[in-house]
Image 1 (cartoon, rainbow, N blue to C red):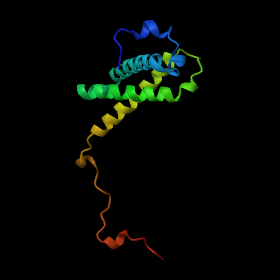
Image 2 (image 1 turned 180 degrees about the horizontal axis):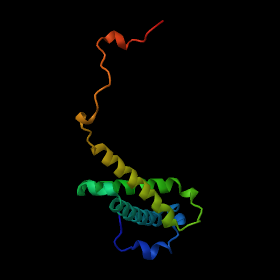
Image 3 (image 1 turned 180 degrees about the vertical axis):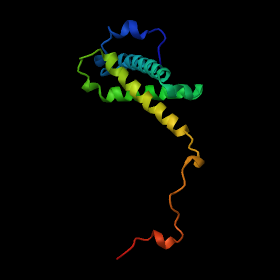
Image 4 (image 1 turned 120 degrees about the horizontal axis):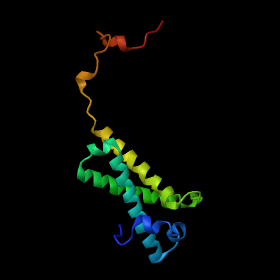
Length: 138
């Protein structure tokens, strides 16, 4: 979805993001391509920064980057009305990709975590009879 002829830093400040993303036709399509490119860049940066990112394989890493960027674009569009202009639009939008990527990487690392059964301590007492599991009445 990215456009190689557009550089994020050079043109982003001059781009009226809100107007174009709420517009229609080719102008909106162009804004969506630019936003997705920005989100991919943010997701890649976040993946590199995270210690868990190194544990994710190359193909899976790119999958995480693309899916995080996709989700971030959807989130930005859903919250476009919340943008107050107190910061640059790109700064505001970047956080969506950073948070989405961080969440996805943490889940990925957690799901790959192996818990050895022999590391779980034995129970303090072992019940001899199943009747001991029943609640006691007075």
